[in-house]
Length: 125
Image (cartoon, rainbow, N blue to C red; front, side, top):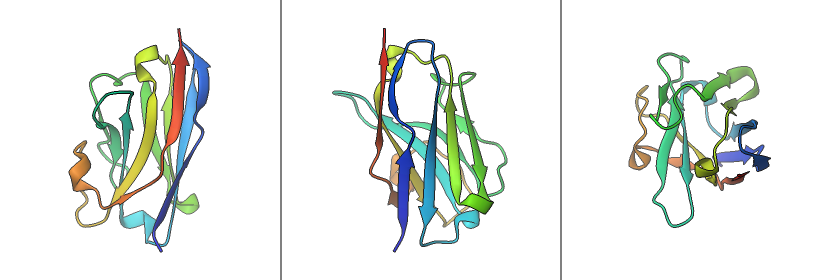
């Protein structure tokens, strides 16, 4: 059974940092593209970042570029999202997603096959 489990969310003040983790199981993690998405209150789900299986050319949404860093540790079947200089508008449920069909990184949610349950990130002003 494929599983993606997010962790690391929480409450942080503006300007603070959090590191989210996405642990995968039930599939060959090394071969999968992993994406991070978020959905804020009353908003649509949006792509935040993604990383290919070979850890090359990660993609970032314009709103997080320079503040967020995605990385992966295939030995631990885990992808991380380091979030620095957090803003109140980063408040959302953050989801990770996986796709193994092509080594293609995209912020389009419809591309991904498997999804985690999400972790809440709240940034106070």
